[in-house]
Length: 295
Image 1 (spheres, rainbow, N blue to C red):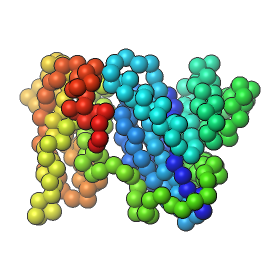
Image 2 (image 1 turned 90 degrees about the vertical axis):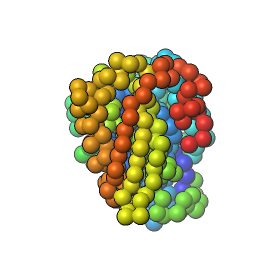
Image 3 (image 1 turned 180 degrees about the vertical axis):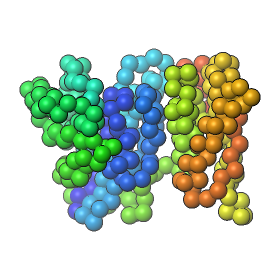
Image 4 (image 1 turned 180 degrees about the horizontal axis):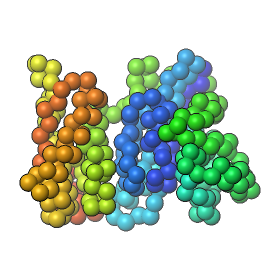
């Protein structure tokens, strides 16, 4: 039996969260076509009869801009040094630059067993794959290379087998019914944030935090959830609310549907939009909103 922890690392939008969700078989990380989707180390657990893979999804790698992104990059750096193996995810559709090679080389150079998932092959020319694999090998990155499509499920089983091959022999780290270490309350906040990222595209920058004030199951089995959507500017609040409140009603409805699916019960959801100016560049406000401390 082989079991161990695997850091999932790569540039923003490489498809890390989508890949983890497919490998684990359940939604344990939110997905958005934008950077900064993942802010915390979200742990997903894949259990098989012959072992267990404990995935740690890290924030995407990109240039630092404020205190929030500094915290996110620190999370990635810390995670990469405290695991049994690294799953390095590269967006094949986005091409392969010298910067990409340098970044992959940086993590390969840590001396931790590493495997490369070359993603999004369903939307790119197949002839590019061998050339990119050769470029990585010629740069001294001798990690096993797996072209995959999470959306199509292509080569996912082969990748899973390759990851297991990197892990040490040992007992399972979690019981078989565990798929994530995150609480239901945490995932409810993430589902709300995901729907905001998907709906508002570039209108709302990533300075949005979710604070769950009430998370309570009633006697009749329904859930009462009250949460704040915290943005950084008054005009962002106006966009989030929309004309006559239509925008916030629509995004809340989408979020509620996913919450009900996740909790397996009806949800009574109340949302409020609040402004905390420049919170993502203030260590004190970030801690108040749940970043940088214990969950």
